Length: 113
Image (cartoon, rainbow, N blue to C red; front, side, top):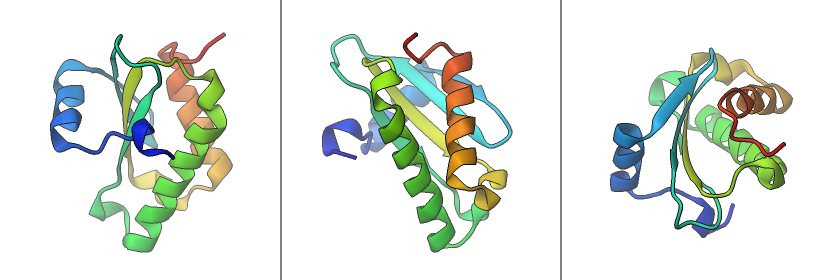
């Protein structure tokens, strides 16, 4: 994922948590906030240490980045997203992570028709 598509700064994370909206399912929590001045979406990923060791956490982040990459053309452009992985994600395969992410995005109407 290119640098301009990432939320990296802690202040950006905090603004999204405070001013954005959230929606969750068993596997993932999605925070999102509309940014009208932005021409593409940005994502921030958070996988806590309780979920597993570094290898497990990095695999989950890789799966989430790949899912966003595959859904890139379907996601509404001017939003910032923060995804927080929950415990069940450590045992999930890529297609399950992608399905869970699609569920969150479609429920909140963040996918193009």
